[in-house]
Length: 260
Image 1 (cartoon, rainbow, N blue to C red):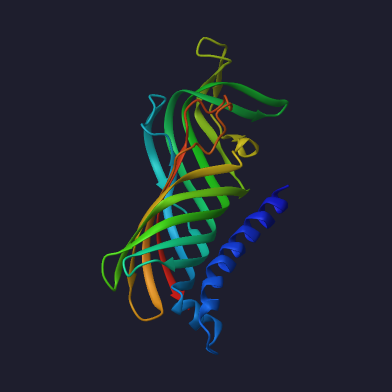
Image 2 (image 1 turned 30 degrees about the vertical axis):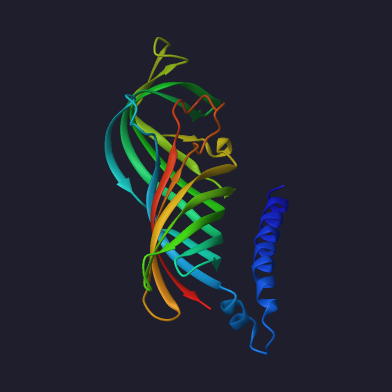
């Protein structure tokens, strides 16, 4: 199923390339295809970069009492982009991006809904104590943004994106605390050693949000940019009961690119 969706998104992206490229056919000369596209206001771009951020609830719920540690991990992105200019100031951009969104945190929580993996299966309840979480998700992302060029070197981008989860990991362990089975009044189970949990199979397949960024043209073909993405929906489905609050992915990325 995932391979079919990836194939359809890829076809959609290249259809957009074909649509923009058709405008260059009206130029009756023998220049290379890329030059014809540029004359029609179409640019082809390749970008690579890194990002840092987190999947976190906003605002921080009462269950999370203290953040003891945070590691942003190394999140890499690769993107192919086409940009169609309509005026000297305005353009429309479409991209196809492979990206990672990950982090590692350690927190102190109280009455935190949890499902732990134990020797004879799994046990669910509310946890009080330490929680370490590792998130490492890979997405195929399609952003569509309006571009406003402030001048010949600087531009601002804003628009929506939609991401499909290719591979997901949301797991970790609890330690030094206790679990109340079922609810806060349930039987108390003391746990003083690391006990794992894994919610990876419950991650949502789709994530959508807003992307805003700025771009600087360093040379004729080379540019750099900074982008911020905010996930409007949670990385877990609404009907997932173990995570009682939404986890919004928010990431700030630095990228470098080459335009043809």
